[in-house]
Length: 138
Ligand SMILES: [Zn+2]
Image (tube, rainbow, N blue to C red; front, side, top):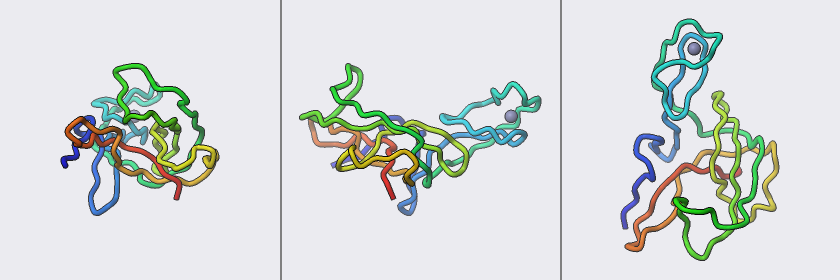
């Protein structure tokens, strides 16, 4: 079985630690994900961009449950199981949306601690996995 990122270059996992790959402005510290080649902060007058990794620790700010299958081009495994999309404030300053990896979305609570993980988003007919970033409670 093969595992392939759903999009190349957005995340990494080394030694079991997941990171989102983006950039940060050295002048004003604004984080960007995906990476940006210039700073978009209107109050920043010196765009000085460098590569940055974000995660894995954060706090669930809010979430919403996707109760029905999303339309194409969204992909998911059959049979469809409702999942939650969370908005997470990573400890290193990035606010980012990601799918929540939980057994029961009824157990999610805004304010709970979560961690970034890399997990299968869906499977191809040949059984190979398409990986993406997700968040799970710690
Ligand atoms: Zn800046």
